[in-house]
Image (spheres, helix red, strand yellow):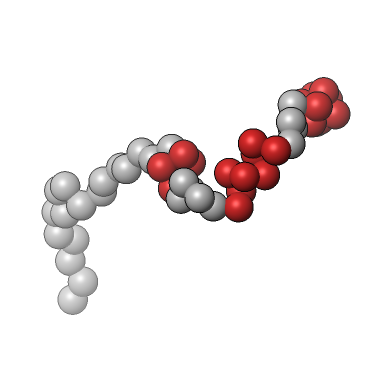
Length: 48
């Protein structure tokens, strides 16, 4: 027989920023520092 049990406290939420998840010396950080991607916002403005 299946029964429902109360699992209080089972659901947890964690909040992380991308800055925390990408290591300091990762290639993505080097690319971000070398290239100005701000032009992309104008190109995709009508997609939002």
